[in-house]
Amino acid sequence: MADSKPLTPSIESKSQKKRNAQRMQKLGLSLTKLNARQLDDVQLTAELTNSIAEYHRIHSNEAKRRQLQFIGKLMRETDVAAIEQALELIAGSSAQARYQIHQLERWRDRLVSQDAALTEYVSDHPTVDRPQLRQHIQRVRSASDEQQRRTAARALFRLLREHQVNLTEGNSIAD
Image 1 (cartoon, helix red, strand yellow):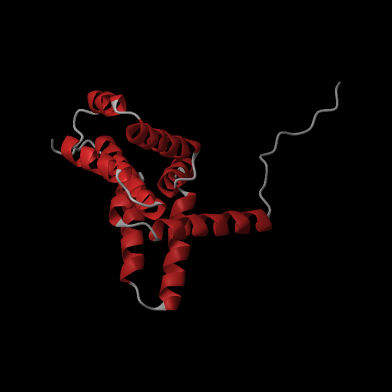
Image 2: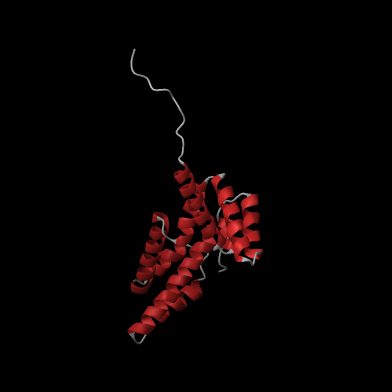
């Protein structure tokens, strides 16, 4: 007969439980730092959403600490992988967020350097505000010095990013 070990569930040590609780509290704290629009993007339970709202109403430091512990407790009962992924997207640290930023930077550079890029962008994104887009491109091209050029290029990037955000939310910028 082979040497068999009894099947016992892995028991978490008290230290590991404490580390997990602290991790959930930190995750809960990052949720409390989000604005209402960002919180809507994260799929949370109603109880967790209410607890975060309650955290914002509390003024006492000790009461906030206890509320944060409660939020951490609720976090241990939810799927934190989805929450972490949503937080990474919001923070812009995920690979997908970095990819989207790089795509927008490429579009901005192409729009400034190539006349045909405007037609291509408008055909791919028909809801974009064309006159405003043309105006931003013209500002970058006609900037008299490097500082003005960088400022205008940032404004163009913001316009492209806002359009992308509006598309992902299901809204569109009026033509």
